[in-house]
Length: 449
Image (cartoon, rainbow, N blue to C red; front, side):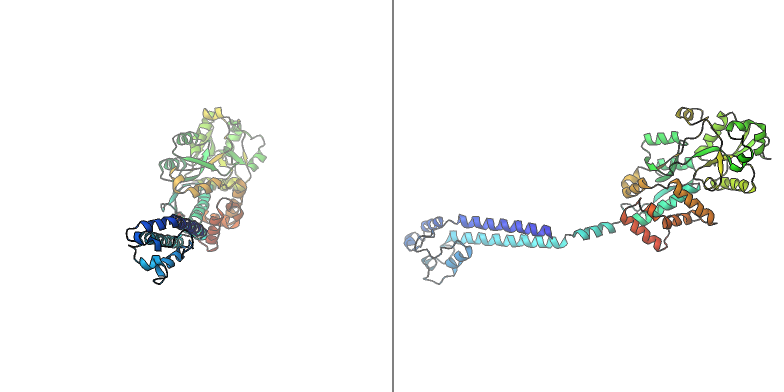
């Protein structure tokens, strides 16, 4: 409405100025001359009072309404000009000028009316905000998350899906699979978000995808995580203090601790899940350390099977050797020890990999199409980070609640850690998410479990 008042003021000022110019143009001396020179009135010019303010003027006021009354409305005989010339033909200049001013007034009124109508249709600031808030997302196509087959990735996906659906109104979905196939799916646009890309495990395909602009790196999660192919229970090292290096696995005494019927006279090493990038890395490390004759590699079918293998040995107090990482549930809950390895260097990793893993660099990546399709979701994912301390809390909760699923863990986190996730989203989205939690809602795109 403030805009309407300003426009109205400007228009009225312009109108007054225009009318004043018409009246100024209606010069009194010019009017008299015009009347005098008219063929009909030339003979009677002596009867015309001048309009220049000299004595005998019956219409001294410059106000247009006064002039009109004087010229058109006075009784016959009261003014020689009107008495003898009552038609526009007899006073052409005067009446034509009055008609111009009349029409200009009508145009002004029509313009003002148009402004009023437009103002009624213009939304106020609060209405604009309400309309923006109620606006639907640009696309109704689901945002597909890469459902990597280990616990931390699944729980992070469930949390992020909830934030996207309830906070920003986008539908979501999930495609389950292993590391390498799902990364190829991200490159192809079959999935749109991957929350855990472990580097340097996937360094080569990652570098290729970044160089080809097939994926976009938008941040980190699980900062400070670690991984190792050679982990043993702490109680075993307490029994055998000299067992502290990968080189010790060549010692028959220590190697015999891990032999089974399956592995024969070699130490059984539970390595990475089939299809994970670390499956290839760990095999290369074993070969580069000269352990192929001493170690028998077992690759579980999934993360749950690998964890169950470790939990079983730990509960029985038996020796166990294998791959673990810092945010995997057993590593968070059990007392484990990493055998010493040569320190990581870029040169080593680029060649033989006969060295320890670097501290994990876990990236969040999206397909480029999401940048335009859901920019507010990308902004949220840039802020998204479940650090090690937060994930330990999640792992302890799932361990204490037998049978809890990743969906259960996500809902517990969202309800218990509002101070964490509210920092990743906008205030408006946070209010919507909290309302959904209070209503007991689940994310529609969560897969069945």
